Image (cartoon, rainbow, N blue to C red; front, side, top):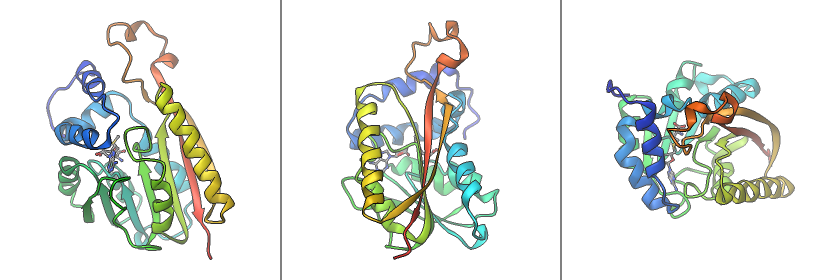
Length: 238
Ligand SMILES: C[S@@+](CC[C@H](N)C(=O)[O-])C[C@H]1O[C@@H](n2cnc3c(N)ncnc32)[C@H](O)[C@@H]1O
């Protein structure tokens, strides 16, 4: 994080300027946002990393220090910074934005950082290699397409956990994405690839960054936030 003095208005303006639903434009936008990414997300009370990691930890029975973690759409490395506090040591990160990977590299926590535009390029990860696969804040329209969840499962070890944390952003594209995602999760369960460990919902995933900055102060607290969900799956042993 930089020590600049960003305001809530700056953060909203940044979110609102990122309009394209094309993943290539989106990661280019993250390149330019990388330096202010964490500060702007803190200003919007972004809780996605905690939502995913807390739920994962409620259900993780291995030894954190021995676990290999694949952090997909790792961004600035926020996930590894939180997980290292819980005893995890082995992280591989993947992201489509070189600017965000440069921030992640500064944490010094990742054994490898790989550049890949998911959905266009294959997930650069060996099959069955990771005890934990985590993706936070990147399963949405214009980000990683739904097809990526099969690749997440593929990268997990048999019996490994796949944790996905995402926000319910308003609008038709977001609603359709959620429907398609949940259909795919269910289909993969029916195919015997994994089984659900559980779901965790929050009413306060983050402040809705698309609200008008002038009118937002007049809204009651609960209407300022969007909800979100963490999905946790265990890869089948076969
Ligand atoms: C909201 S940030 C989440 C970053 C991190 N997981 C966190 O929670 O702080 C979304 C990240 O997804 C990446 N991203 C979006 N679409 C992508 C794609 N198709 N392939 C790879 N990375 C993508 C962006 O570059 C950005 O770093």
